[in-house]
Length: 425
Image (cartoon, rainbow, N blue to C red; front, side, top):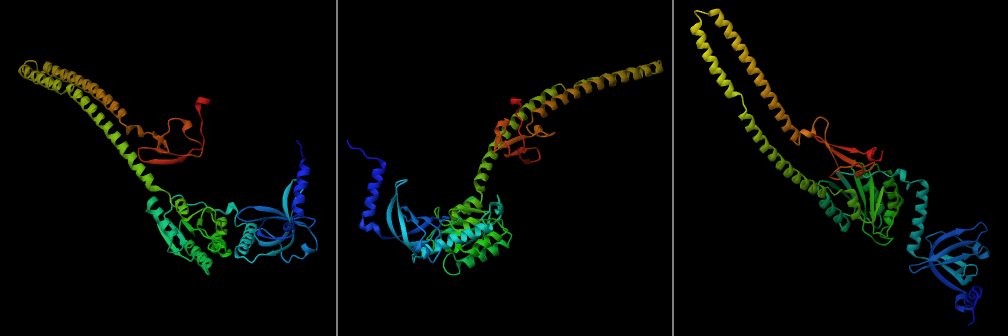
């Protein structure tokens, strides 16, 4: 079995490419990417299309000096090449001897896109420190898009489903063709002066020509200069425009922009209503139970009431008074002293008995109040929930979470600043 070295295989393959008459000189079209000018003057880049890409080198020389334009990424070109192999890594590559720009709109637009992108990037229009925070619960949302079409209908449908109370304000604009960029920029300016909470800018997907209005510098600067947070929802997942880079938030579609701008409060409201019903049922069940217990205690208290004993003593007092009247003539002074002593003892006994019964009644009332669910929410006490669930342990929350503290008079929303776990001390 005969074997060959890697070098032999590379040389054999290289000779096949070099000796192929067709591959000695061929015109190849494609888009420039990864373009680099070396310090010695050579140009390295790749030519790509929808199928794949190939590395290309153009060496410094008389042909290179004849280029009338600067080669850069995104250009559509026609290159006269030969095909060979670089022995060091065994890769097939193209050796360009002549390059000219292809007369195609997409290549020209790609070049303009990359040129403007680089310019605005260098000016800082894409910097994250300039991005504004989207309002969490907006009342008014502006929309810059076509008055007809799927984009505005999708936004309206999503708004009705998620939060029908949000006011939508449409600035109808052209989204493609001549004058579209100017109307989009004007729409952003008009809505920005209305002090809205959020602005959505976008349209459905399309070709680079269809989306070109959103690649214009006037639109980019209008977005950057706006005081209102702007969400860009232009095209589909694969489409990216200059407006996307400048906007405070970029999403792939107008529908996604609507979902970012408008919170889903209807689901939250429905969940809150369901939880309130559960809490109300549980509360009234416990309240009825406490009422039954209170009624039993009231009956016990009435059975131990001092009313009957007081009536008996009043009758005895009346008897004493009759006896005193009979003896008044003979022993007036003695009877008078006796009457006073009797009344004093009677009142003292009644007062002590009344005080004892009242004290016991107060203890029973205190016990009842201790069993009341609302009594637990006074004197600084409350209960804490996170994501509508009671917080039973410090490990249920994390630093930065928002929790709700329910007191008797209302609810406090607080942010967790520090957590101390006593079980780890």
